Amino acid sequence: MHLALLSLMRRMLLVLWLVTPACGEPLSYQKEFELKLCPDPQKLAPPLRGDAESTMKLVGELYRLAGPKIGCRFVESVYLLSLGDLRPYGAWNGFMLDPQPEDDETIDRLNAYLVPRGYSLHLHAPDADGRMGAFSIHSLEGLDKRTSETRLSWIPRYHRESGWPGYYQWKREIYQRLPRDGPFTVDRVEGVMLGYPDAAVDHQEEMVWSDWPTTISVFLPDCRYYTCGLPEFSLRWQDASDPGVVACEREWGDFLRRCWASPAHRALQAEASFQDQRRRLLSADTRPEQLPNGDARYAESRRLGFSWHGVESRELDSELERWLPAHSEALQRALRETADLDEIARSAGHSRLRAEHLWAWILRGSCTPGEDAQRLFATMREHHPQSLLQLYRRELNDRARGILRREPGGDPGWDGEPLAQMLCSSYCRSVFRQLSDWERKTALEAARARRDYLPLQVLLRDSLYAAEK
Image 1: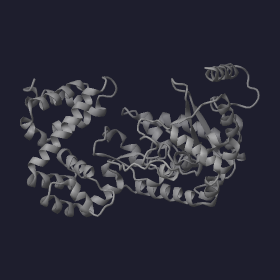
Image 2: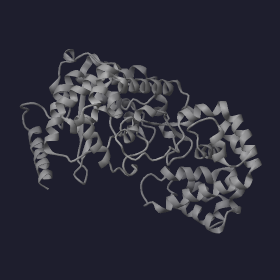
Image 3: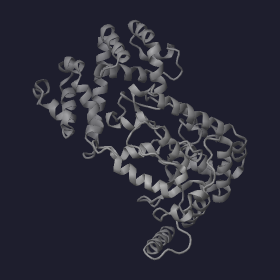
Image 4: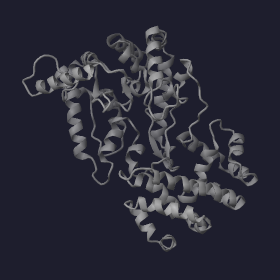
């Protein structure tokens, strides 16, 4: 309580300071504080532009300046890509442990060092439990790079030579030029700032969430060296081979590998204080998606002696999508021989392929256009109709029951769209009467629970489904 009160008092003093004439050094909570710390663009230090050794030397300087508690965070890939000038913004990175009033002062001290170098840190407000939301990192050179590469007409060009004044002018301009024809307008700007390729930004409205197999993740295994929020992003499956996506994967992955291999990183990693603080962070990480004693998705768990759980991602990703076209015929041949998706995955010659990935392709082929997935679905339907039906029933039941377990509210399309995709498919229409009474009832109850999603409204008036009322 005492620490929370101190933090609250400091913020109250800050508010008073903001409404009075400026004096002293600006704080990291002040609006556009960078303009006061470095108003002259000519005084910016040269950018790093993807130099891994120089980036890790900068991380070492920040570690000395901040101390282990905050300093050990700068090695995390979500921040490192911004410090290396490969993207404009690094965020989405958990919470700081044991927040203290002096942490705010540390961020102020870091900003005094970083802003003249073209970077800045922004603190997020504490949550309801008093935990300090993690800081975000901004890179002027990262923004220059991203806006020079884009083909999207609504993204204005930013030049680093314009410094922080030009940065805030750019932010005002992009919101003025942003298309207003969809529900994800602000998310588009966030995607640009996070360095996502054009395909991931421009097609956001077309993605289906709730782990639906038409939306995949980018393939960036190197970003999991340290436990942190990940700089991964989602794509339509059609964009897996988009040149911008492929280039981003290659550039980010190569840079991170060079960072981990650099002498500056090895020297920092060998320090006992660094190791102790990283171990403390990992043991205290209680995010819902984490497994006990560290998440197996992160190599840091094993390095620091935590249990290594044999968990593999079940999500489809861009690397698997690029693999499929060259192996579609082989998978079809295997499907003709057996309906055991685990056996097919083991013999397919891809170390990361799982039965869940094969099923996701088959499910996609039942609902949406896509030659390879449709051929897998057709093969399964022809040779193993009962196995297909059982898998499909399980999927439909899981989707429906998941909807009914969730509290109402929020975007009805988030989990309503995958259900609509299934119920609208010609395959589902052909087998719907074969489902048990409770299965049909559950599916339609879920559809009615998301009837604010227009496609489900229309579907519920369809004669096949309306007859089930």
